[in-house]
Length: 123
Image (tube, rainbow, N blue to C red; front, side, top):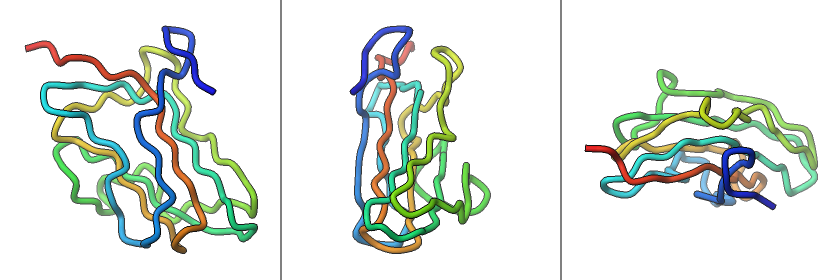
């Protein structure tokens, strides 16, 4: 599904179908790593409309309204949300200990997939 290189979306960095409605980390770069997030896909998989929160926390894994990229964002039944798609070089840059968090309004209805490129951080 994904291609690596400057014209693609990179590789799959994180994916989940949360069984809880509590915001949780879906992806965080490892120690000494930095990532450019190029695409975040949210897919509704139960046949029911739902909502979700998506968070970008540059310094950790505490998720709140203040670091929401999307808050209570609606997705239609069997829908796909592609609103978070960035050109190569213009993505969301994330370094350790930052993370991308996700919270569905209803457990097990939404799958979130995060694509990008991860690199060694320049010291």
